[in-house]
Length: 108
Length: 118
Image (cartoon, rainbow over all chains, first blue to last red; front, side, top):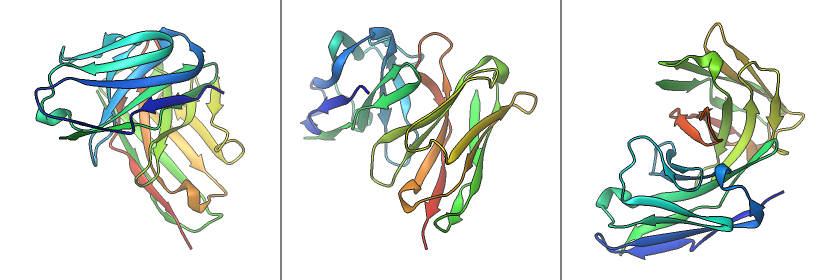
């Protein structure tokens, strides 16, 4: 089973600055099956990025995804107040899905 | 496009519950669906997948043998039968639609809370 490890656990960044979140897989995975989600308190997750780098419908271009193999990154170029939330990466394998444990992005 | 879960509630350990997910705004029968849960204060955990026809179903290890996923395409609905419930099954259960291309979940419901406690 593939394990996704996100780092850091908590990231403190000021509004307007850049945030870089990491997701590392325990073995090489297909980029097609790597996604990123945002979740705010009391809300359902929202799809941000699929296929490692494709923005979902309606997602602002300040969100970008990159990576391949075992290392993937979500970058938020200029943080807006509404971007402070928990972010999860997700992988689809054959017959199962795996989520990372999440990175909490908090206001510095 | 909307998915709405229902059926959550309070149940004792060993008990059962049936969750429903009703959908609208899209052709339900064309989409693969999933259940994902989230324990209080914890991260996301995938529970189950069902193909568009209902012929293929996958479960997480934590769900195998206790949970059953099904769907009724005529009623545009997804179901999750929870049995032999444990305290650690306490979670918000989300219904999520899978993107046609790729494997991400593009539409989520608001979730329904299942509390297992004596």
